[in-house]
Length: 130
Image 1 (cartoon, rainbow, N blue to C red):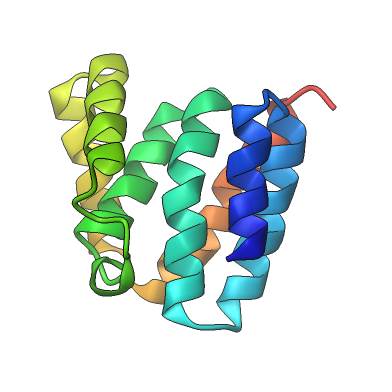
Image 2 (tube, rainbow, N blue to C red; image 1 turned 45 degrees about the vertical axis):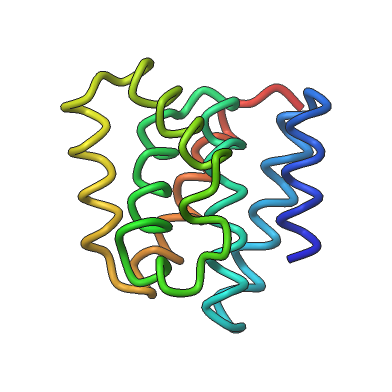
């Protein structure tokens, strides 16, 4: 959870590349760890990906964290912060695109979510300024 928190703090400070790098490390570590570790990385990754210019991937993360297999271990689900993030993503994407992406995330297995996270983060890292 520490790396996911580092990612969250870095994105809040405006360090997109640093946040993405920390989030990638957290996602890699979570692949061999517990579901709660991946849930923390995915949950923190919603803001990171959104602020890094990838709102659709953020919506996929949101769906997996709140509707998919990670929902049962996501301790932030239902919080005011989570609700605010969803409102922001819906504004950017529109309701239909948000729902489509969130439903794709919800339909993923644990392994698919872990693999998707690495790919989505790598895409953002490729496009981010160092």
